[in-house]
Image 1 (cartoon, rainbow, N blue to C red):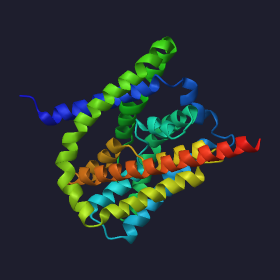
Image 2 (image 1 turned 90 degrees about the horizontal axis):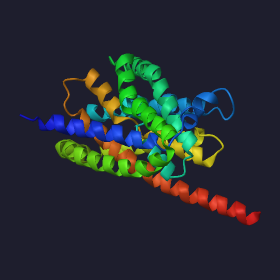
Image 3 (image 1 turned 60 degrees about the horizontal axis):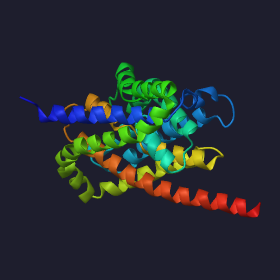
Image 4 (image 1 turned 135 degrees about the vertical axis):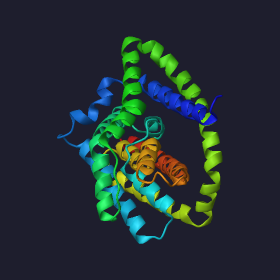
Length: 297
């Protein structure tokens, strides 16, 4: 007998692989390694991204958990999302709002690689600060990062290198198919988690998450460097994190709590809305600045 839960999980997994593969077909190896090649040269993009995403945003999450009385589900969701790397499909959103390909793909690869070491380390530090037993294995993070980001992205870039014209034609089609599968897979998950999400929204917790997401965006924006497009991309990346890795952190440390998906999904939904609004405002502002500069010249 077919297990519906396994079918849904498989659909989501396949859709993510296809989405990242389609993104890879639009990228080059030079894009993917751009952060690593400028590590110690201005504007020191990787150092800026690490500061924003692995220091400032986790500090914001810790402060929120320490200062506000919120359900454990939300506390764990905020902490887990704050220490996770960027989600595998984020480059598409960043480029939609003006992010430069070499920056967004370089950010995805560099942050994913550093997360293998930094995420377990940050989780342990969080546990000590909050006097809680928190941990996640480096091998577990490495497997998730490789399976959901690095492997399909690399295959996509190799495909582009071998057949660039075909990659340009196939990438939009594969992306649309993948998004369709992802939506179909997520709808049952959202339906199942909705009662828990509704409770969290009803008790005002949603506004706390909005505040944390906005603070994360602000951190990435101000640390993002001199380029306006890069600041937008890092602002979005600082708030949008990998829900699969966050879920792994939550279930590893709180296996008995079945309400964790509701808290993580609520954060994902709110962060998606906050970053979309921010991205639209930034796109308008950057366009106005460029138009003003062109007019003066």
